[in-house]
Length: 300
Image (cartoon, rainbow, N blue to C red; front, top):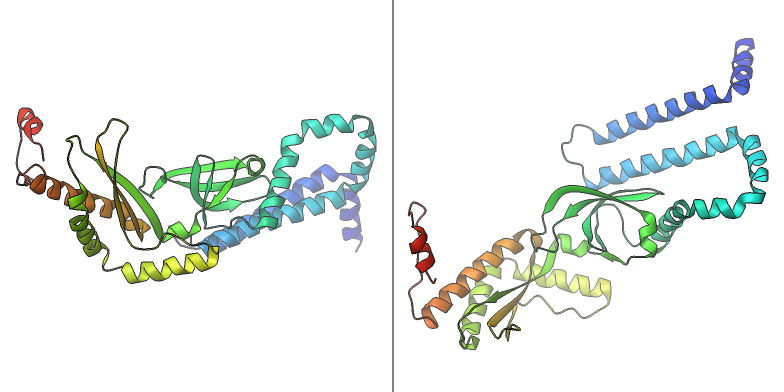
């Protein structure tokens, strides 16, 4: 008991040393917990990411409480001394306050959770961590229509939630409305190609059409809005220069969007060569070597 009393008295007189000990204990315990949650997995699941985020946020909150209790008397004296310069402190800590309140706004509105896809301004990605100050996402190439991870990790302050709209794209993790267009230079009537193109699109989408329809209805019920539907849509327009342009919209699995786009482009060019240009489509084998002049001479 005497040793315990001596230890308590020592740490009471040396609060800085005690603070370092508390920091070390918290850091060690948090590290061990995160390592235990991570386990031997090469890729983290959504549940693992959630528990890691909870561990970090919980340990940080508990550490703040302990530090407040330890330095309470000094904090009270410091707060009284700040009365005259309170306005200056608020102005200087404006961004920090906005980050804290932005975190509260995110939690209260439930705008997104870990594992969901979000778009904040020009940033698109999957949320992998959020805390009181910042949010971290794995960037996704959404604007180029590939829906693939870029390998970049983006961290932005929570104050951004007050100035930039947050779009929740979570339903796009499975199925997405994928839109693209095909432009041709020759002036031609492309409407006769639409039925044949739609038939080939239906063939490509046949294996997942029923699942896509059910998933589309689920999204409609969850959002409470009437979505365009799971049927593919094709319409013809022109560009500002007067070139014919075909627009295609699909509701398809996200991971297959790029492959389906390439197949549909191939189908359209085949139909265009056969029916508009009256040419047989050119089939190029992998071992064929074309000269530069021959490549330029190919129209299809």
